[in-house]
Length: 342
Image (cartoon, rainbow, N blue to C red):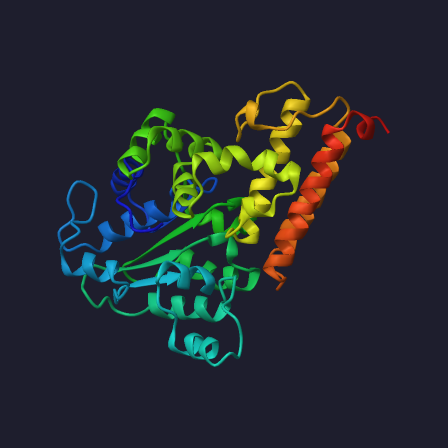
């Protein structure tokens, strides 16, 4: 999502899909598998003046316009927070409201933006290659905005194509899913993912550790690297949480802390049941005492509650302190034979 060249497994999926007919696609699967990257490859090819081998040429006026976020025949529907993070311009009215402090950027796809997209789909193509609409993450449409899209998805006016990309397609209206051709994102093999990550400048140890930390999802692993999380920091995190070391998550946003603690809790529960951990190496985890599962389960429930309140305007420093303190207490109970026995 940061402008890197598409990974080979993304390019292969794009070529396969572009060879098929259809006006609306739904790309779905867990985060980190490249939904946004695949959607962008499809959009470039659809709008390119000289597409070749199932891809945009990268050099024509159309490809350049997409790169600089100014293509007249492309409408991007995202939550305003995501638009700003990815460098897509907001509409004049929305940008003015945010600049004037009348409201904060929306974390949902607003119905006003959806209506603009529907109106856009009815216009004549400016560059003569048809029009395209991207919806990402599609699960951020509320019921009103999703329903506003339905009729256009079913009967698109003129030469317009839609690509909806989702990391939680089960949250979409069934009527939206039924109007799209579905494509399940493919997991790359570990060797393929590690080779690609090495090509992005990561050493072997860091690539292996971060790919494991991301649950085998290479784009999520690269995001960890871009945020300054290295192999050593990830390996030291579990025991740092046992000590209540707030410095271990310094500079992280609250959602990153919650996600990392979820993974730690999950791995502790796996080892308690005699299974291998998924996100951390076994030797990096604190040793849980027999009977630790109740403490770990309660911690998991507390983290789930924290996830549901991530959008609230908490003080970041206090939020980090609370999460790390909660982790320290939970791990202390889980690792103490005396406490877990009571």
